[in-house]
Length: 256
Image (cartoon, rainbow, N blue to C red; front, side, top):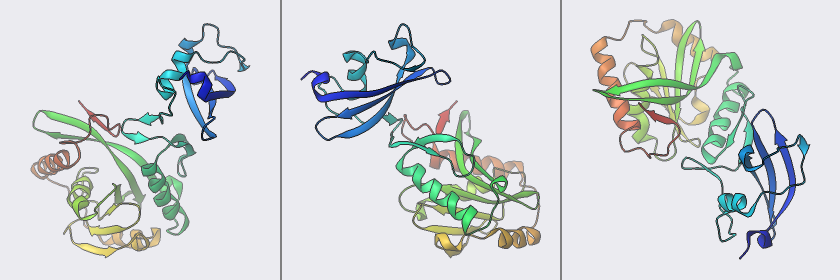
């Protein structure tokens, strides 16, 4: 089947900033619109604004498979559903199932929990190592109050219980001192952990501390530095949980 028989190209736009042609393709069989970014290299003379020249069959083949069947764009191992605006930073980011849960948490923090956007640092990179093995992972949310990190929130799909130790390790690596509150969540449920003891304080997204509650917790929390030996242990633990056995195409993990 010729790809041109199965897809119609309705719209072409050239983005100078992204150096790509943004193409809206519609599958005639299922009438499903799909945006796909084609590199400028596919077009010898990329024009500004609307363009008439359709992508070649090879271009469409790369996007949809040589048989003309729909092949959904992927980023690493994540299904890309489109684009969305990050609720905290305002950045345009990929819309994935996982990212929708992260945005749900972001809206909860700003809406019901009364944090300011400036209180929240999303997608914080963290270097972890186990011996000679090193990697950079991302912590979903760091919450700053009273001039220190008061809470770490880590999202992952699936069972929350298996994520407890991972988020506790993160709470002992993102700062020189123990972060008082660590939250493990799958976007539907959450466990709120005491960073020092590791005990579960409460359960449920609704029980995540509000800004005023977190300020009270931070004001009464000790600020003792975490020892170098403890840091090494926690780094190994986090590496084991997050990096060992991870999917090679996981873009949230960068092995060094």
